[in-house]
Length: 185
Image (cartoon, rainbow, N blue to C red; front, side, top):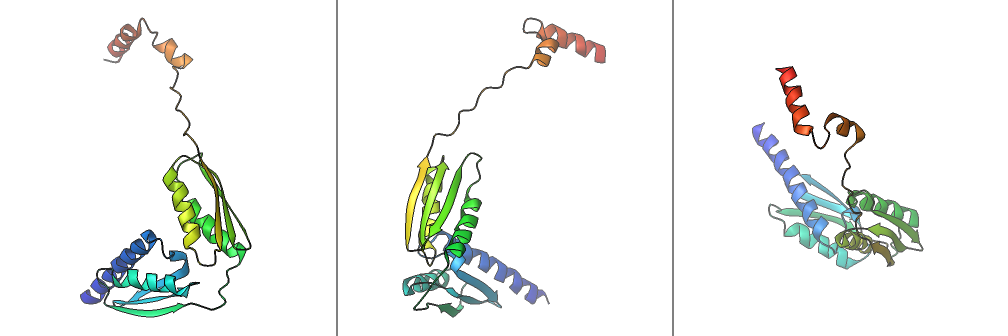
């Protein structure tokens, strides 16, 4: 029983390692693959549009520490097609996951497998990540990058409110505070 639990825990950790490696490899997208690990055997399936992407996925998985056996079920159809709505849905989910700062936005528009990315971001890296996610997704024929990099908004210093000034006038703040402390004790 204990070895079975340990094996399941190792399978989960191995799955996380593989997904992290694929996430950072720009040749292939996690959205194209389904990875399942059963008793140490990595079963990878999905559809990709080129043999290059299939070989890249298998290479990344095989070079991951802890992988001993791979069952390859990746299919490269000759007439691979992914609808515009499907491409837009996948990319929109990926972009929404990337944006963590308010004020940044990226719109995804897909027509005839050509992705157009529009919007404003503060971080150049976010722009690059969005474009990379679009290019690595199978079924995308071209990417038009219309994302602008803007300066982040300046933070305005907080002003002292009227109520605070009434309680603690600038010239008598310490005296009033001392009086309040005496009343409490």
